[in-house]
Length: 281
Image (cartoon, rainbow, N blue to C red; front, side, top):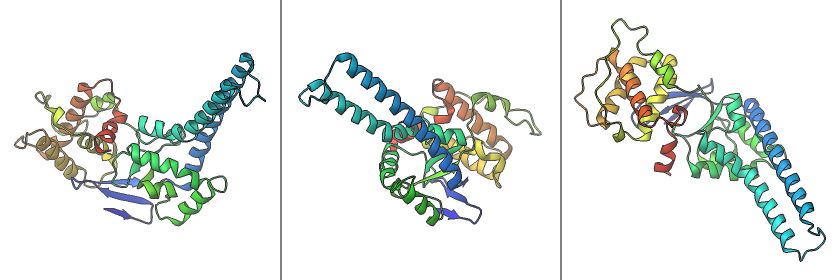
């Protein structure tokens, strides 16, 4: 369930009944991100086009000979590359960086699903292919009109794919988790949990835990949410009887996330939910 408020903050309830607040990105910030991305795409296209022309000149192919197979293949390759750069650029980075293109990353934006989950290949492909319509007649004319009309500033691609563009709250690192546990608590830091069967957790469970840790400073019912999330994680790991005191819930969540990251040390925490795209697509 999504509730729209006048302050452009939306609250999304996860299946575990945990609500997270997201600030909807404005048109101005999205426009800056779009300019950055278009500039990068233009530079890449220019470099490739110049490279292809230099290759053609060195090969001695006659530009005026339509029977020259090399020229035909070269032109076809250039058209394909231009198309892939125009549309594949966004899809590639949104999947690689969990809903961020270089432009969005620079200004602190992220694309998420309407249920708060990371976007997958279908959502990214739909929203970026519809970009063709949003770009009409020029400079995202249709898209800007759509964002003005829609209460959540969505262009047609977002409406078609069921996505939202929100301000990103930053990422979590293992170092920050190690430094943070119960710094303000009135009791000693918990001893490490026994070996946890974190392989039983779904990527959506890990995403929920990381979203809590990322946003906990701004959550109103922080301790209650921590208890609910910790219990949900222990149930997923077939440890429903593990005792959880309210003051212990947050460090439990931190230790579980750290155990997941340690189990896959080559995966950045920033993309913790990226595997969900594969399992849910």
